[in-house]
Length: 201
Image 1 (spheres, rainbow, N blue to C red):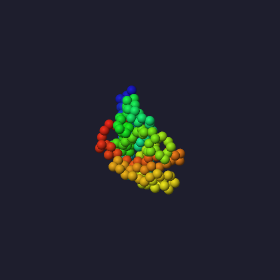
Image 2 (image 1 turned 180 degrees about the vertical axis):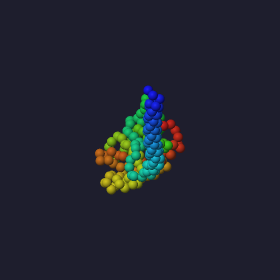
Image 3 (image 1 turned 60 degrees about the horizontal axis):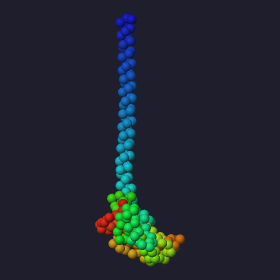
Image 4 (image 1 turned 180 degrees about the horizontal axis):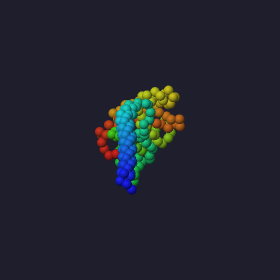
């Protein structure tokens, strides 16, 4: 092979290497730009999501639709309430007081807020469940109790009494279609939190 042929081969080979390197550079540049776009898009989405979160939280906090939000109490007849309370405390670990057991839990929409539920056996034959003939009564936690009572009246639901206010919330009693007495409670949970004491949780 002559020197001229060898030089031509080297020249062509070098040219091909430069072209390959240029192509590789272009590929890397395109990949970099695509990654940047994806990062930017992801960042934009994250920013939008973060902006949306306070708005969603605000909607939840400002929710005043008249409705039930949870269970507030379970009340039932007992021949010997004191004995029953002690049994549940000893065998099932309930934190027992003179009325039954206060259950403590967190609000799903406002986790920083502690909510409460009252479990309580009543002396058999007590007037609390009347005019129902059943041996129990369920208490439902509600929001906007005034609006809820207004809606219930419009729907022909039997309202047993007027809304009564206490330092721990508002109450009213209604009847369901099967003769069960229902207690509706718009709670002020902070009252129980400030009061303190053992709770079941």
